[in-house]
Amino acid sequence: MKVIVTGGAGFIGSAVVRYIIEQTNDDVLVIDKLTYAGNLESLDNVSEDKRYRFKQIDICDRNALDTAILEFCPDVIMHLAAESHVDRSIDNPAAFIETNVIGTYTLLESTLAYWRTLDENKQANFRFHHISTDEVYGDLHGTNDLFTEKTPYSPSSPYSASKASSDHLVRAWNRTFGLPTIITNCSNNYGPYHFPEKLIPLMILNALEGKPLPVYGNGQQIRDWLYVEDHARALYLVATKAKIGETYNIGGHNEQKNIDVVNLICDLLEELFPNKPQGINHYKDLITYVTDRPGHDQRYAIDASKIYQDLGWKPQETFETGMRKTVLWYLKNKDWCERIKDGSYARSRQGIIK
Image 1 (cartoon, one colour):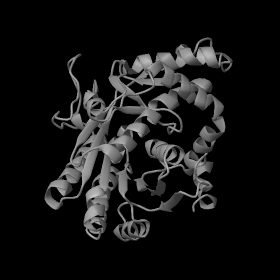
Image 2 (cartoon, rainbow, N blue to C red):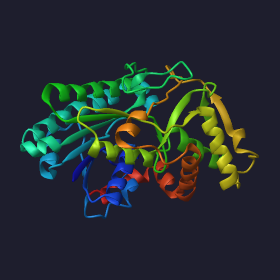
Image 3 (cartoon, one colour):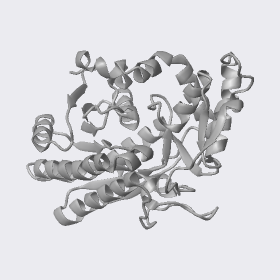
Image 4 (cartoon, rainbow, N blue to C red):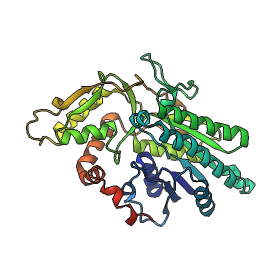
């Protein structure tokens, strides 16, 4: 097959691209605007493969999308391009509306125009797979409730509201225009190549430098954590095997309080990197409670039984095994982290882009 991955230089997108190149015979075209979170170094392991291509395109640019899609002739489009950081959405909602809503609309229109040029057989086999988040559901107040594919939407932040909007657009293009679409909503991802502003890599890197480990509020917020390589495997399975019009929740079966996540990171670092910065006796001494985020959702938890029943997917990593792999990856790839922190990853793009 030929697969387009929008946002393929991002955290989850790059994991999907690596999975496709390393585990299948498919061709991949990565489309990415290369905002601050897009890092082509995350694709270094596959970038020399003859089945890999890259185009720097803003998904709001209809002409560039039309050209790229018509030239590549994809069988599947996996749409991961998105602004995704809740704190940034509070500071600058406009960027999230532009990319997540207008960008998704533009991509849908470009895809629909392409799909209409295909013969009947190719139309029937084509898929537009939209990758979304469990944050569109809002939060859960009970201790036993779970998000299902039928949970009503109740987004809390500009980020989750923009993703909810994009989900609705995708369903509308399926029902109104017949575009073959599928939607997945995932829980919090973690793993290698995660941008350092996110919770888990931030805590790892701050601890290694002896900096405070900032925890919002009392740290009792609960999230379901999904190892990114498990997610990539699930996304490819959905894109290639799911029925048109279906929605799947993808979760890691790993509900954890934020403070427990931070404590586990500290415990792993005590074991794997006991050489602490000067003046630090225990990594947990660095934990600092800070003012809570406005509108902070209390609990997310996914019922991922449907994807297991329909497609046979379940995560291979437990939270403990996935976190160990994650901490080890950051310990072994400090240069990657340094290039992000000093901005050199962005300055070097011109020499990498194909």
